[in-house]
Image (cartoon, rainbow over all chains, first blue to last red; front, side, top):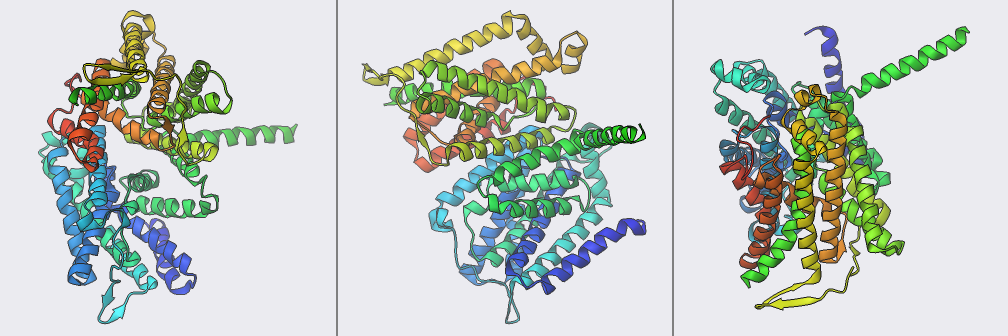
Length: 319
Length: 289
């Protein structure tokens, strides 16, 4: 990697690491945390969507499963946040296997539909299994994370999430440079060819799906301890769609693209909060325009139009 | 009791069929599920309601206006959002359609508010009792009208030139283009037709329940695309049968199971069909990607 290509990520990381320490505004601290949180989610979804080409419209569901596991475990047993981090990740991974094993032979949009169905069934379970999940009221009073008697502040949570994000990015980088990563990308490019070359399609698809769910579940645990309250409303299909947009618009199948997508799609809707009623119109428009720029060459069209406009001005000036 | 639920399910099911037809035709020509389709039905219901109640026009002109509005909306959506990304991965089109879905649902909330609106009775409902089964003239109207529309659609698709062009485009878009079919016009026509059917479906649901609300697009949309999967994506008879089956399943599940389970039934059907027979009842075995 050249120095130029390393410059921006390192600068970004520096800003990311310094900001929570210097900013005093609790609102900004909270937004930074949400950006980091969604970066973890987007980078993990990218393993399934970007590298392997599996459509998943229920990533927020795995996030929610991790959060519920962490909430119940820490309230009922007083387990430490590190235990709930592992448990949340592993249970989400388990659900990933449960969903992935029978369904990953389905193609493209069929898989997307299955994940929608799965997400809705889990959501209805969260809403209706009152004795376990307290239904729509959610679970309040989740203990915050503490380490050796020190209770995590929002700033500490920022660093905790950032460390997990960096570990995750490093893991994804290593995977994508390895034999596994090449197998995943081969599956994405052409399943039949990959199969002919001896890639065990089902094994690698399930592996990608499971890894993706694992990190989402871990993010859920971090989130549960941070907000100390979970309810089904925090893990809806709209959230899954939002995470998917971060991956696709940020750059699916690239290491840091999803992070950029997460920064943009957390910050932009937040800036529009003043127009709360109109907000989702802008979010929807951003999705359509983002897709048109990425896939439909809208950016190119605009550039050409500006170019022509500039050229026409130039001629007028000359004349 | 069971017969009663069958009648109710049949009524709901035919409205789902009309919606499913649009999903299925669009899937046929562009190979993706247009998640904004349910919201188009919702917009249709709102336009008809506004014209009927707010502007005090007749019910039939209100419906015609709603159908026209939805056709324009559907074609615009296709030209603006889907045409430029026809060659892109289908996930991109899915995201664009979800974006449109957000825009439509929020747009209606901005214009007409988030609260549910009441749809006044369109006709004086006459209740009939035959062999212990009760049904009213609204239910009869919905079922008869739906069946007539589906019959006309079958004629259109199998007996007219544009129908033949539509079928050819669904089988192979590029080859159809080489055979001199104007693909762009056919795709626009598909969106216009699908949106008109969606408008009718949305209005029927609003009249049947006597109410309409901004999130109804997502609710009936889910039933619609589940019906498509059940019947077989891209298949016209599949969408009709799938819709009616969905209505029956939902209605019967509501009778024999607790209400919490009823909401999950559509999704359980969706997952089961995809696991057991992803091509659905009438789908082509070769599922192209």
